[in-house]
Amino acid sequence: MEDTEQTTSSPAYSKRYMIFLVAIMGLVSQMDSWLSLIETKAVPGILDEFWSGIAEATARSEFALLQGFFGIIVFGVFFIAWFADAYGRRMGIFTLVLVMGIPAILIVFLSFNIYMFLLLYSVVIMGTTSNLWEVPISEEAPAKTRGLYGSAAFLIGVIPLYAILGVYFIDSFGWRWGYGSMFFLMLLLMVLLYYMKDPQRWKDTLEARERTRLGIMDALRKLRREDRKYIVIATVVYLTWTIAFKMATTFGGEYFTGVLTYDDDAFNRILLVAGLLLPASALVSGILLDKVGRNVVLVMGSLGSVACLIGLGLTGEPILYQAAYFFMAMVLAWIYVYLAEIFTTEVRSTSIGVCVTGARLGYVVGPWLSAMLTAMFPVMDGFWIFAGLLMLIPLVTLLTKPLETKGKTLEEIEVER
Image (cartoon, rainbow, N blue to C red; front, side, top):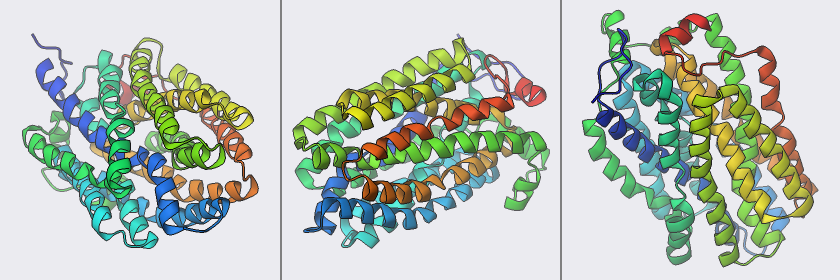
């Protein structure tokens, strides 16, 4: 029995293929999440190795400052996004997986100083910032369950393997293998992607331009006024989220082990619970996105993040750090689903690329803010309060009255926005 959205642009793919697609994109998302979140566990080891004998507050500040400089590399993510519009979703995902996997294994063998590590790390993070894995699902899923399918891939991606296997690799083999282990998932994905199909919607746009490749400037010129409006909205939300979450994931481990003096086992347990709350959030968010709407999820996630991060700064309670993961993941679920549905098919990936490129300013601003705040607040109380206040900014975008896309087909969204 088939569960399909029958439109002139949508093929009658079976529910079985949709499950297969969600599984593959979920594994790409898992690779993304692992490489993004493993640094919470890896950073204490990085600081111990490259800043041996240096005061902890100074080490944190200097590391964050360097991380911000190298963060400029992540702006190259735009070219991955454009590549997926020009050459297809399958080739785009294939390229994305290579961009994440190859530098990850090179970190193991070539990180002989902090500069080489940050160079390879920044290329990896450039890949993790693309969000490209959400696009094929959006283009294939039925309208009424698009949020659920998208969140299902997100859920697979946030199963906290990094907090189970990742901490084991780091504790057993060193912090470098926290990154290098993802090379093996890359090899598996190379096989699975052979069976992926390009969405019919993308094939239709290729035919409409008579099979000519979409140049970068052509793609940018095709952005409409409505596209530009939603690019601004999405970029503001995503940039704010990136800065706050980057602060939390980079310095969470250092805060609990370095400032609050928890031992490694205690922090591993804190991180595991936080990680388990990510798939729980993905599941709840997927249901809420389709039942109560995109805007409600954004409000809930933002306000919850504000309360948890400010509370963490005031009390130092681990449960608030863990709960922040839950609410921050709700905002991320909104980002993943909304960005993948609000733009037109022909320039969907390019539009997302513009958004994530703008948002990736957070990979420069976030570390530089962290450098300043860790220097100003050695016990990091003000650090967390500032991160919490940042999460009020996404609520401001609701004043522009963005289109509620719940239950609408991509064609209806294109007309109504």
